[in-house]
Length: 379
Image (cartoon, rainbow, N blue to C red):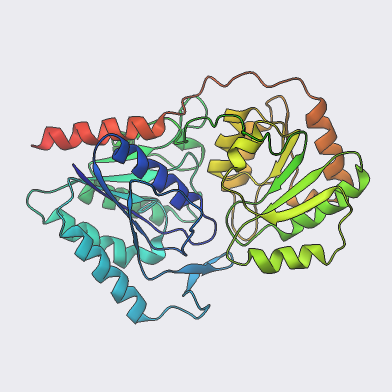
């Protein structure tokens, strides 16, 4: 079958990473997959087996998701939006059997014209593809009831189901989004979407280190600065700061200008990060979807500093649900100091090992099975 997955990441890279994980799962099952990505290019992400269609890229203006910028940092004009729609409609001419929109209509409302144009065109195809929404465990809670009503209307008009990439025993969608009776009937819980648990690193990279990361977005400066200060208070422990984002080079230069102590290494984000978690003494990170799953799978002691700038509450809700686990400590960004971070790291390292989670991490495989079964049922 042919599968088209449409995703636009505007700040971090978690949305694209999850979409690519789904795409690789479809490809591994023998399907032809295209992922249309509308955010900035992220070359370090694995898209083997998946045709990656890069739309004219957009990003948010920091945490202001109502103002979109192009790859040169200028406010996006109508020509960019037209080019994106034209590229999506061209991709639709391949007549996919399955169309998946990531996050929309529960988010990316600023791109509603783009998504609705695509959905209307897909709905008019013959044969019509199965149309599914793909959402993570926790959504940004709606600021107005009208947003909930509009999402329900769009789901009812265009969608055959909503794939919730969560285990309801861990995080039901109701925790962050008002689930109406009509929406509940459309929900399909897949389990968490995560790659297979990584094997140990062949070189045991990260052994006994504190790994500090802030995802793939251009955020995390305060976290890295606090980590350098905490490392000064823990001279016997090696710290490694992994810096991602499009401005990683300038971020690294700024951090090196702080003259970090000798037990701190600073380098760009690494593709083998998940393998390194198997050997680390502890992780210090934000609490995005992919990072949380990496930590749960690896069992790494972790200090979580959820991203909460602007109106962001998603990571805070997720961190709340993880904070009760052994070896997990939550530190709010407002409370982040080198002293508190050092104390939190010492606490999680000393905590008893975390038992293996009984939550489901086979969400990618289950997504393929659900979507393919629905597509077959239409023929």
